[in-house]
Image (spheres, rainbow, N blue to C red):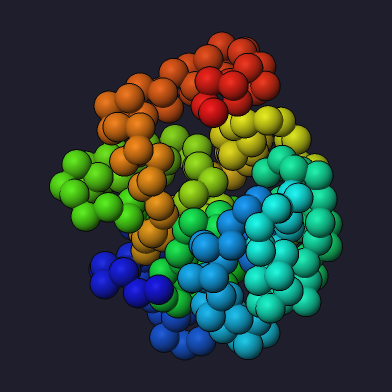
Length: 255
């Protein structure tokens, strides 16, 4: 999906990455892992894009957590690599990673669209001479799907915070070199905040690469619950998490 937005990267990678893109990228294989639960509508809209990823020689792995709609049917129409597991986003992503054959794991939510040439930008990162292959991970900037101005402000703050802190959220399409993912034993299998937890582990090893090209993710929660209420909830959950509240309790607040 082409968002029509300017493409770029954080300053220390920008120039070298553009040179690599112009000269071609490595044969690095990317495994796109999508945890799903009753996501037939979103998968239907992603279908042609995901099939194009497979046509490029990469792989798409869909991990279903026990859907009751047509999610499994559509998943099998997209890829041969469909896994059924217990529900739980972290558990599902770990199951997908265990089956992955790629050099790089990219975790994609079903309501998030990758930007045009996203995989080429990720592959180009692995050509950077100043990067050690085993310690590369990162995320994309995010754009919320609503056209209202308030969401431009929110996403700008999200992107600034994630790049400064090296703490990414799952809707930013986190990508991790597979050896590094295995080194930290994957996502902590907790009820909520698995993206925050894995970012905290990864940043101890290396800072995240912030790809300024934007993924587009659904703003449905923000729109249905209200902007102020959602912002306050997100900060409340983070605060509770960092002060040791159990992810199971946080899940109850989130739902």
